[in-house]
Amino acid sequence: MSDRLVVSTRKGLFWIERERDGWRIAEAEFLGDNVTLALNDPRSGHDYAVLNHGHFGVKLHRRTNGVWNEVAAPVYPPKPEGLIDRDGWGKDIPYSLINIFALETGGPKEKGLLWCGTIPGGLFRSRDHGASWELIRALWDDPKRQQWMGGGTDWPAIHSICVDPRDSGIVRIGISCGGVWETRDGGETWACRADGMFAAYLPPPNGPRPEHPGPAPPCAKSERAGPPVGSAPQRNLPQRRRLGELDRDQRRRAIFLRFCGRRPSAVAGHGLVHPGDQG
Image 1 (cartoon, rainbow, N blue to C red):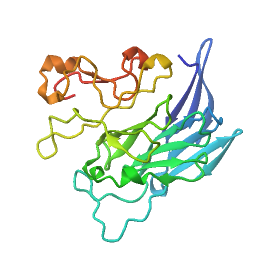
Image 2 (cartoon, one colour; image 1 turned 90 degrees about the vertical axis):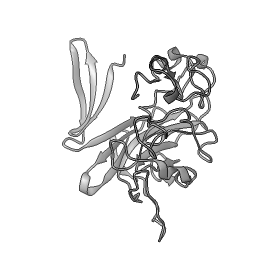
Image 3 (tube, rainbow, N blue to C red; image 1 turned 180 degrees about the horizontal axis):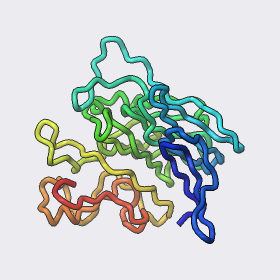
Image 4 (cartoon, rainbow, N blue to C red; image 1 turned 45 degrees about the vertical axis):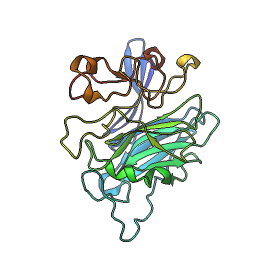
């Protein structure tokens, strides 16, 4: 267990350290502000903090050599005139940043590369430590994106990003609600890897469709983890079977490790588990 925790809250960003007689707050930043996300980049030593100021919008800050400075937040391109772009609920998709939901570093050799998942469902990439951002058009322009819908948020949210430690060109993202998507060429092309996962409790035409996954487990760091899993289920799930076609006991035993490694031990006990009828 780590002796240092970074905790983002609606009242600020806190570094909490363990001492011999317990835990203490070692640092506090942005007191009184809504800090929705924090990230440390071990490649550069930079710290990042996402602040949601409500009416004043989402701001991204970077700390270098102990000093915080505001850097560029992702910006959506203008919506083409006359374009009809709606989500799976039939709601118009705003072409503006609602929130930053996920932030992740690139590979160890890509010093300035960052990935950013947002609401309303755009994935962005920075190659200069967050100084500028580009929308990943291959994912945004995919027609299947209009099947995504908000799950707990008003619009679809990219909430998890997992960069494969063995090949940084392989990136998997979790979308609420839009399933698991994967690129194997650094973002040039994308494919949905949620086959076999659907929300059986939704009436047609909303079901069956890709069910939104939980937070992506951390990618395995060990070389023993085996090859990355694209869409292959664990061996205890019958091949070519949907969860809706399994009986109750089979569903309770069906464990999906769709992000990283085939053995539960390879991902420190993390996985996607279907414990019952409603997942």
